Length: 629
Image (cartoon, rainbow, N blue to C red):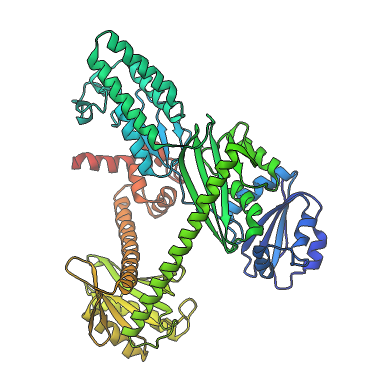
């Protein structure tokens, strides 16, 4: 049971008074900045003692805490019944709020798995990004989808199961077998000539192999090959021999790291006292099947234990699979609590260990070495990329006649126009700060004053609106660009220059032109001079990146408006669907595509949609599809 206590956010926040109110109980604390944003979430056995530490002498604090403390304007705390409950709440709040000073892992990262649809009568082996409770078995995670596709392809050489979407036994005999059947990559259960028990045996062997029990399968296949040879069934013996060869080929690709026949993850890292790289190696049945590496900037040596603890909590609280054993390079706080949390998530015991000798310590050293190499490579890549960016900016500044200093092209704004016919005319404004995209500063303009299809007029409207806001110093438009770039050639540059003259602004201007192959090829200056980008690799990389990003952003907005317009007009044709129901459908299903794909039962689940209306919507779209076919 959690009891939330909030400290009122205001400029007169009394830290001394609020610290005295803190209870000596377990809980979670939330540090906030002057804007009321949560910048850190932490867990405490004793809230009073833990939170006070942040506002005492900071000489023993880590660099992260020293950087964060001056930015704390207030705090909240949530009292829990136990330290374990506080640990779970801390994980959930970090995931929800993504505070700046917590260890943050990418939410969009989904590790690939191999999925065996054992719930189907004739199962398939597929790649999956998410593990769901659908009755299938999942194996992994793997390094990448390429390694999964390669493994599945090799497995189908050994165990030729189907990979089509035919629903069997319903579709047996309805169509001729596909090419996979004729080239030996499928038994052909769709013919009706395959014993379901034989098919299930193949699926069982695939699962055994993915569990790491290779030797069991090899021994059985060797026995089957010998028996077939003794019975003078040489063709069958040859097929089994080929399967054994393919099976050994897969085994050779998997690096054996451990003699253990159970699942392990190895988590270790390296720091250069500036940044830290953590590596996690996925070992299944003693074989390395994948790895992932994370770079944490600004993490020194003193931060590694707390970094490991936060990483373990965040990584496994949303992991699709938790192994029997997790090996760490050094002890972490709350080890017992974290083991309890992992056991609850897994539904079985999980050992978190810090090996000091033997094979398991060698695994830790293996991960540390890989982290060291990865950190060095990333550092070198960053240095090289920064050098290329500086060189590209310097060349751009030289071409536009700007002073040869590093800040001459600090803020670049680029514009592009997009439309579908004469409708949904839009323009994009993207921003590159110091040669890197600043997506928080992007703007989109819905163009309303231009009649017909006139790209020059569209570009002028977008520039005029943006630059008038600059003159009036409106919020989020007050930053003055050092350089303006427009997508297009001399005509677009002339149109943009006219707007600058009209508003009395002197901002360096250039156009980004493409060749007949639709490749970025020239930079058109305000004076109409065409600068070839061939032979200028750093400038080419910079300009092509800016042009591609401006185009992507404009197209995405235009497409979104077009889809919205088309979806609304399609829904307008359905009797009983008015404005409120249209908005309810879009809000519930998120896209028009999802509405079209939904069945009548799902449609009836949307707010305000009764069964009769749901049936009308379903019939409208599906009758239309039938008519088209």
